[in-house]
Length: 467
Image (spheres, rainbow, N blue to C red):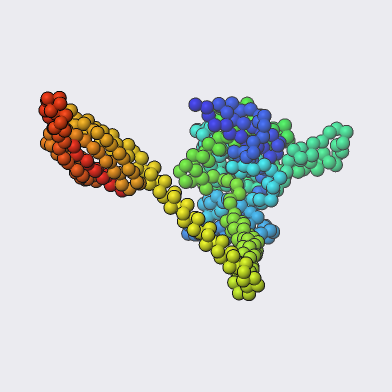
């Protein structure tokens, strides 16, 4: 499965890096949002503030730290402008107190930088050595104008340097250098290393550690080579995995390890323990947007609805007025009114006749299959060996079917059986209309000298109620 690609933006060099499949490469196309962005320590305001240990669990601790910073005139803008991160450490003399290494970050400093999920400072990147160098116990990192003391890759204390290395800020050449500037630079560097030596001695005594070297978070070419009782090594020497890397590459690797540590802590709900200055969503800003939308609805939509409702009422009122005028207006021409009334009655009568014809036609259509079945049944029941149909007539209405049959048979019994069969249906009735025997004329019988057998005739009416 393809690993996720992480991106890093170095705010000092303005170079983007991507980390994919364990390979570090420059970004070909800057993403819309980086995973991590690191800024210079010059954007941080640092102050060490003494507090009581019992106040560490107080929900008002952040307010107290901000209040102390404003009291000392360290902060000069609104409290909403800053993000705070602090690290508590033990007090040297009072066990009931502790010291908060407080870092205030001005949000306005990153307005020109691209957005990022994680926002941290260069001096916090050595946190990543907790995964890169498991055997690292205590070390000091010289990062810009700070000496940062780490224990087990966790920042414990920070010492601010008042003097700056002159060569790292104002490179000198033989043509531009004068005796006075060289002397001044030499003096500044001497004071700087005296200050560093003083801080190292303090850190060794305060934390009961022996520190023999300082790891520089910059190129050693920018540092002056003065005599100092401590060796200065590149930060990459802290881990065998990063040994020999230049500072820009090391910084990118530390940043990506920083992302991995942050995501792991985030899954455990402990992401606040890692320095992270990304801007938090402003609840008040969302509230302002909501209020603005509601105000727009109130100012624009509601008046528009009232205007539409007013137009609808005006139209309804005009229609009612027109109906009232037509209702109460005098009849100027009575003859035309009477003629219109007769015409309307005639049209209504035609409409009623048309409806009646349509109903009758519908009944004829509905009883078509029944008429066919009626005729078929009559022929089927009369198709007997001893029955002879002399005549048959049918009369139909949409509701009633009538069949008039004249049948003859050699026996009255056969005609009675036919009559009984025609009376089997619940909607059908058969009636015997006439029944009489017929004897041939005696004279014809005498002439033919043969007596012909008699036949019986019946006139049957079959009535079927279709509806």
